[in-house]
Image (cartoon, rainbow, N blue to C red; front, top):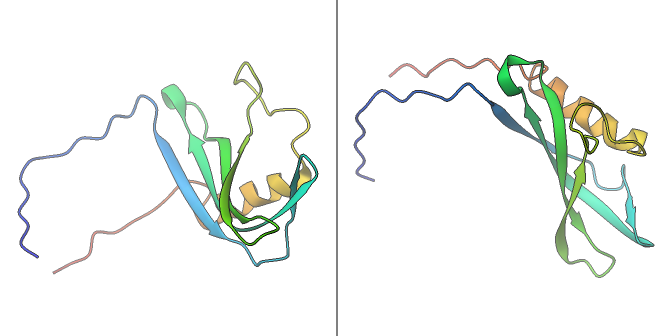
Length: 117
């Protein structure tokens, strides 16, 4: 692969967002929507810190298998309609997935060191 790059990239810090993926052991979580059971194998939690506020989980995207074995996606919105607090009725198991994602990302205090050549 031939690739070149120039410039000094600058990240926009007004509304930083981070997506953290978590692989789930199949069978440890079952999501039921409209009477259909889904078995997730992966979750991706989106965290945001708008205008310098504390990191907040906004939503979770699940990769699931339906009863026929087809892969589909399910999204769970975590914030209420005013986006100022948690959405009522989100099951505790989903908040546990959010906690797993936050823990795996160092509570979204992600640290990284550039590899040395």
